[in-house]
Length: 556
Image (cartoon, rainbow, N blue to C red; front, side):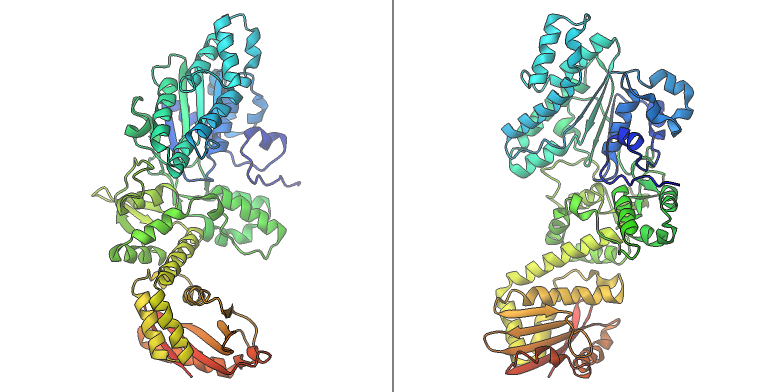
């Protein structure tokens, strides 16, 4: 049987049918939405969890003139009465605010107008409508040209459509909070809040032409910020019981997809890397972007290793901010999370972009909202049991925290001078004191992961410190003698060479013996051969063993 194409980055629902992309059926959400009606329905999920595709599906289902064959053999097609009553029966306005990302308020307004102009152009044929007045047609023309009252534009368009079709309008707004994020980053947040508040207020409150609306976004922005003119939007976040299975892939859906491409043997590694999100009552959910990208990588190379696909499409700076703000208790909590544990925290469901990083409590909530943490249940005191969902997100945490820790060390110029002097002199005790000082300020998250993961972390810390010396040539894991030394250094000016072998100790009492083992390994495997063509004046050997926030160094 011919295998369907993998839908990497495809978010137009019609493409799945017309271009034969593999589709995991989420049309059951339509039934749930219609059975639980709300005038304004807001769905918040992390990036790359299928929000845009869901919105496209809703558009194709409800809009007048739709190709009903798009839904043949899908879940919703079994609901005959519902399809007769709702499919293809409504004028639909669908816009995305993702591209409203100007560096200035003026640019952002132009970009918002682009969304309205595109939506209005879809109904340009109404210039021939006998049901519309000349004034209506002039308004429609202005909307197509991007002129008039931007704040009232969505309401005006819905009124015109309702008048022509004699049916109330469904409004779909994807990435509703994107303009606020960009406005905050670029310094015009207050003006954007005012505009978006009016934009939503006109369209979604006291709009007699509105049947219902659906909004999607990442954050549940506080009512006081932009929803003050609305009557309690019906919010569905990751902790709410409904709609859990419609965003992201369930375990059964992932198994089905792996079977479809003869990738069943990769189920366990797929689950470990990309599963783990808890959405409502749906159980664990996979990030769909990751699963599709991973399947594509495997079809190209069955020996492919799992990758961090999500990092490049998400905002990771909040982890770095979290590490920077963390006190000693919070650093221990982060270490516990990265070891596979959980922490209990209250979640602030409504944030503003202005206050999202002003306190550790807010950042805990932000990490949850944006998908870096998930929950394993709610406690009697109202707190949630939070954890890192999977190995992919754990790797993002580790990378960002390692960067933060390296930067923190590099800011301590006096400490670095001591570190370099200890290496120059072959002074193991001074080297050990310097490293122990910096480790005391770190997050000892390497309690989790494999032995290699832990060793690599400490090796990365040393490399970060060493590479700030411009006159030192630093290499890692290069072939030499009978093996690969962890770190080799050549002091170009002084023609001095250094070899460092890093070990991870399971227990603190093993530090001395493990450090000595590192030193003996350098000699046993003849790592000095790496410098055979450089003719250094001296080669210093260091064995350094680490355990949590302690280290032991030996030298010769």
